Length: 112
Ligand code: AMP
Image (cartoon, rainbow, N blue to C red; front, side, top):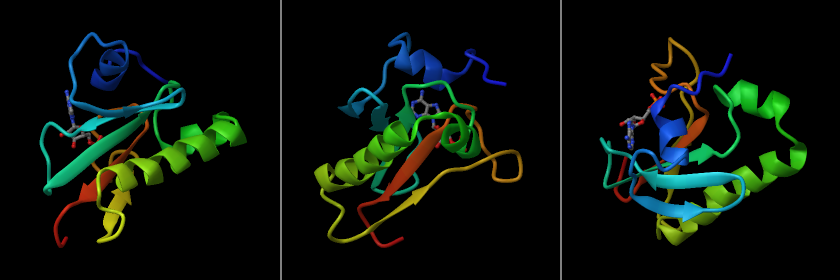
């Protein structure tokens, strides 16, 4: 069950500031406040989904494709697609998911 009382929903509403690197009709991307590498960007959906499984189950195929294509485009724009990068999405308690709004981490800019 999605709960709008989470920090990424507030970032989407522009109630909380973020360092935005990309935005389109399906996603918003901004720098992680606590980066684990030189480049650490979060890509969040505009739609309200709690996690990866919720997103791929309920969102349209077209928007799922647009979202993951945007992730690749953002990595390209960040200048890390040639050297390589890691994408990950923490899902649930055992993965340590802190924010219950689906998001993908793009991590790179150095050897991981
Ligand atoms: P997780 O839910 O475990 O996949 O990770 C949530 C991520 O959100 C963490 O890497 C946090 O550093 C990051 N984070 C939390 N609050 C903010 C914020 N206000 N702006 C940017 N990143 C945030």
